[in-house]
Image (cartoon, rainbow, N blue to C red):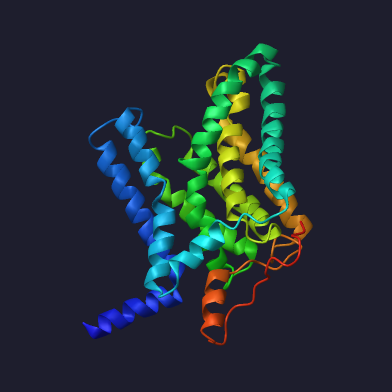
Length: 302
C-alpha cells in the first residue's frame, strides 16, 4: 500500500499534466455521458450538463495542485491576477475579431454579401453567446488549459510543442460532443482548428505574461465570433464548402504567422510562463531549484 502511494505521489509530482488530463477528461466525460444518457443535448437539462462538464479542466487543475501539496489559493490568485495593461484585454477581443473577419471574407466570397440587417439582427445573439461562451461553455475551461496545463508543459517543452500536446488533449476532451451529436462537423477539421487555437492562446498567454483572464476572454470571443459569418448567410449549410474547413484554414494561417514571426520556443518576445504559484510557494519555503519566471514588474510585450 505504501509503495502504491509512493508511486502515485511520484506520478503526480513528475507528470502533473498526465494526471490533470486524466482527471479533466474523467470528470467532464462522466458528467456529459450521464447527462446525455437520460436527455438530449439541446434540452434544458442537457445544456446544464454541458455547462457543468465544461468546468472539468478547472476542477482537475485545483485537484492536482492540492495533491502536489501546493497552495490552491496561490494557484487561484495567479489565475485571477487581472493586473495587465488594458490593451491586452482589447487584444483578447481583437484577435478573434480578425479571425472572424478572415472567415467572413471567405464565406462572403463564396455566397455573396448578406443584407446589412442580418448583422443588426445577430447583435443580441452574439452578445448572449459571448457571455455564455466566456463564462460557462468555453472561457471557463481556461482555468485548466492555460491556468494549469500550459505552464507545466512549458517547463519541459517548447511553447509550440506544448501547444500541440495540449491541443491534442483538448480535442480528446471534446469526444463526447461528437458521439452524442452536439458537434456535427468533421472531427479532423475540428482537431486542426483546436490545435491552431491552442497555438494562438499560447502566444497570447506568454506575450501577456500569463494572463489567464485574458485567455478566458479570448477563448469565449473566438467561440462566439467564428459563427457570425455563417449565421449572417443563413447557416453553415448555405456555404458550399465545409464551414469547419474555413475555420481550420483561417486560424491555421494565423497560427502559422505567429510561429514564423515569434519562433517556436516561446511564441512571443517574452520567456515562456511557468507555474509561478509553485515558485511563490517554494521560494517562501526556501526550497531551491524553483523554475524561473518573470514577475509583473515590467509591462508585457508582444
